[in-house]
Amino acid sequence: MCRTEDRYNTIQASGRTVAHFPFVMGAIAVFYNGDDGAVPNDIQIDACTLAKIFSGNITTWDHSDIADLNPDASLPSLDITVVHRTLGSSSTAGITQYIEKASKADGCQEAWNGQGSGSTIEWFEGSVAAEGSGGVTAAIKATPGAIGYLDAGHGYGENLDEVALKNANGIYLVGFVVLSVAFCVFLVVSTPTTPH
Image (spheres, one colour):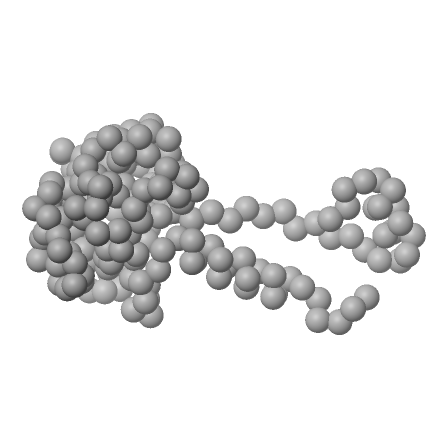
C-alpha cells in the first residue's frame, strides 16, 4: 500500500505499477441469547430449520427439529423470539436470500412460507423489529432465547452465541470461519506468483 506520496513516486519511478483493490468483507451471521448457557453455545441449524424459526413455525429451543440436529445438546423449553431489522437493510436481503435459496435447494421451501427475500419482507406477527445492527444486538441481549441476524462484528463484539449454519457441503460453519477462508482465498488469488 502506498501510504505516502514519496513511496508512490519511488514505486512509479522503478517502473512498477500500483494497483489498489478496495474491498470490504463482512459476514451476516445468526446470533442468539443462550440465557447464560441454558441453550448451548454450539448450536447447529440447517436452512430448513432456520426457515421454520424465522417464519415463526418453531417457537421453542427444545423443538424436535433443533434437537435432531444437536443430539448431544440438552435443550431447554425456552421460547424463541425472532429479532429482525425494521428498515430495509443488506443484512435482511442477505439472510432472506440465503433462507430462500438454501431451503429450496434442501427441498423444504414450504418452511419459509413464501416470505420471499429482499431488503424488507413481511415478518410474522410476534417477531421483534429493531433498528440497525446495534438495535438487533441490544434486543437479542435483552431477551433470553432471542435469535436474530446481524453483521458478525456486532455479535462477536457483544459475545453473543452464534449459530453454526449448514452449508451446501453439509458442513456447519460460523461467520468467523467463512470470513477467514474468504480472506485466505483473496490473498492466494491476488498475490503474484512471480516476483517483479
